[in-house]
Every structure is written in structure tokens, then in C-alpha cells.
Image 1 (cartoon, rainbow, N blue to C red):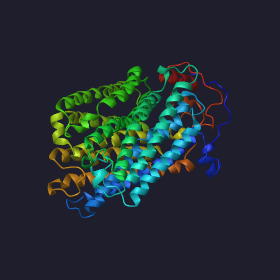
Image 2: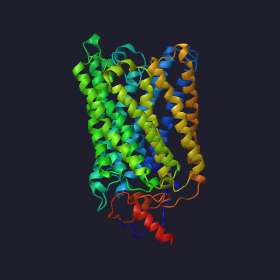
Image 3: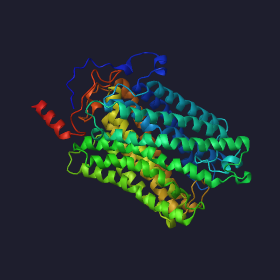
Image 4: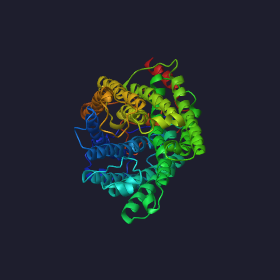
Length: 543
């Protein structure tokens, strides 16, 4: 890559007091990414508090902390916030916004005003849904299954559905912006197979945003319409079909799993190759596998409905496709492992998070094969095995990668370094706390404990106590980064432009980047992840 262009002195725009108005009206993709960071962190905290209440309730077999209705509202609050307002937008909205133009040598996203509008739409949707939660709550579960959500529940389903419907437009606009930017604004020489793998993951995620989000938005809107107007869409008492809701809901919601996990895979690809100092193994296979996951993800929704009454033939087809979609995910895991082989591995905090992701995601993926098997799924459906599997993928995978990404690119985002010791402690606590929280739930599910119950037989208490103890450790692991990363913004040592010696255009500009990223448009003349050349140049400089 040509990095010899002259540069002016770095502008630490994060520390310049431009006033609140300049932030709220900004069109700078980096600032919009930081606005998302603040709001998404707030939503993560609120969802985490709901999870804490759930785990405290489950310490004892009797429902002695909250009543039935309150518990139903609590796990719905946790699910709605964490799925729709944290996991889905976290990496694309925060890191995608901040990094994508930098990674492709662009000055900004293709549609800066649309980018700012997407943040306001997200805030509006989150505000409407939080208003519904605060003024009475929702008790349907995050899946809003009919006919209960349309006819049986007396809670604020309509308002919550409206908030989720509105926030869906934020995802659609973000995906559109990313696709146009990647297609039209790449630096000279940055061909498709020179793109960073994080950009490939954003491209695949954007496809799902555009194709899948309208389906869930309209589905949730139809729930609200049926409740408001008594039109028979899903409610069998009105001539509707509740199974239709499940088809529409899961047609989006299984690809939504990949909205959460594909960006995480892109992050791990960047971190693993950097801290092993190896060129990524099988670059083209990893890139193409992202597109394969995005497309195959739309064909497997029926494995959520093995016990919902669909035909045996449909169940067999969905079971086969569910096994097939695991292949491109396995390609990534095998290629990351091959990248580590004979690498010069260093265990900085981002690498610990990335290795933790690989371990937890592998467990989540393998247990997903149990659920793709028709006979086994009948026994495990609606048990804590489902809860554990889902969290190993989403929390163990997406949240682990999100924290790894924040630590990896934090010096670039803020121009400051954090405490490496505290960061490593936090990464280990998150890994250990997560396993102690959710691995016992595999056993609970195998033994038959249903999910969403707050009263359970006494023989399940030991495993539930272990799970709650793990959640306490996990909470500390999540809280620590908030403390030392905020501290580092003011007191952390100044970061060099490329503190990790990483490959990629984003590391060739100042930390933090100037308002328009590059003084001159960079020209790319090297393949991605050429760490042999980078290390050789560094040795020459030292000599």
C-alpha cells in the first residue's frame, strides 16, 4: 500500500469542544459511530440489568422475588433490548460506521445525511419501545408469538411493536449506505479480493439488512394492526393463522443471527491475523463464505418450527439445510486455526477476546447441530438448552467480538491507550463468567427444565445457583471495560497511528483520524494482510 503521501498534523477532533449541536448535526461517519456507541452502551446496560433480575429470581426454586407477570415482563424486556437494540446494531452501527470508509480509503460514507438520519431513527425506535416497557411492560417474549401477542396479552405490545418497526428502518438505511459505499468509493487499486475481511462481513450483513429487515418490520406491524383493528391475520379466532406469523418471524430472525455474527467473524479475522503476524489462511474462502452464510441463512428458518406442525418433508429439508449452513461457518473456524498455526502469537487483550470468541462460537455452533436434528430437537425445544445455545452464539460470540473490536480499534478511535493489564483481566473474566453462566444451562435443558419459568423443581437449584454466580462474574467482566476505557479517553497515554503494527488503510492515518480521514486518497498496490512485508519493513527501520 502506498503510504508515503504527506500528512498534516493529526487533529484530535474528539477532544475539541464543538458543542452538543455540532454532534447532533454531524455528518462525519466517525462521530455518528460514536453517537451509536453511547446509545448502544446505554441499551446494553439496561438489558443487562434485566438479565441480573432474572438470574436473582432463579437463585431459588420458588418465585419469591417477583410475581409471574413481572417475571414475564422482565425476560421480555431483556430479550427485546438485547436483540433489537444491542446485538443487531452493535458492530455494524458503531464499528461499521467508524471504520468502513477508513478501511476502503474513502472520505465518508456515500450518504452522510442518511447516515445521521439512521441514528435518529434508531433513537426514536428505542425510545418508543422503552416507553412501552416503562409504562407497563411487555410479556410476550421477544418473539411476540401469536395469538397471545395479538389477542391474549394486555400489555403494551402495540407500542413496542411500533418501536421495533421504526428502528428497522435504521438497519435498512445503514445496509443501503454500506453497500453503495463499498461498491462506489473504494480507493484506487483496492479490488474486491484486496478488501479487508471486515469489509466483506459488512457487505454480507448489509445484504441481510436490506432483504430481511423489511419482513420482520412488516410482520411486527401486522401484529399491531391486528390488535388495533381486530383484522384476522394471525389470530385463529378471527380467521387468521398463527403459524404464518412464525414463518414470517423466523424468515428474518434466523438470518438476524448472522446479522449479529457475521460482523463478529470479520472482527476476529482482523485480530487473529494481526496478533499471529501471519497472512490470513484461505482469504478468498473466508470472503466467499460470508456471502454463503448470508444467502443460506434465508433458507433455514423452518428448523425453529419442527414442533409447530409443519410437514415431515419440510422438516427434513430444513434439517438438511441447517446442517449445510454450518459448513461456511466451519470454513472460517478452520481457516482462523490454520492462520494461528506457526504464527508469532501475542496475547494482547483483543487476541484473548478473539480466541474466546472462537471457543465459544464453536461450542454454540456444535450444539446447534443437535437442534437441527428433528428427533433431538423435539426433546430440547423450549428448554434451557435453547437458551444456552443461543447465548453461546450471540453473547459468547457477538458480544465477545464486539469487546475485542473495541479494544483493537480503541487507540485508533480515541488516540489513547488503555490499561493492558485490566483489559486482559476483563477478557478472562468475561470468558470464565460466561461459561459458568451458560454451560450449566445445557445440563438444565437436557434434564428438561423449561425456559421462561421462574418456579422450578428443587433438583435444578444447584445448576441455577452456578449460573447466577457466573452471571455475577460476567457482569464484573463487562463493567471493567466501561471504567478503564472511559478513563483512558482522558488519562490514557497517547497512541501511535498504528500501535499494533496492523495491516489496513485505517492504520495509515492519524489516531484519531482527521475529519476527512486522509489528506490524499491512498493508492493500494498490495494484497490484504501482507504481514511479512510489514515486519520486514519494521526490522529495516530498527536496524
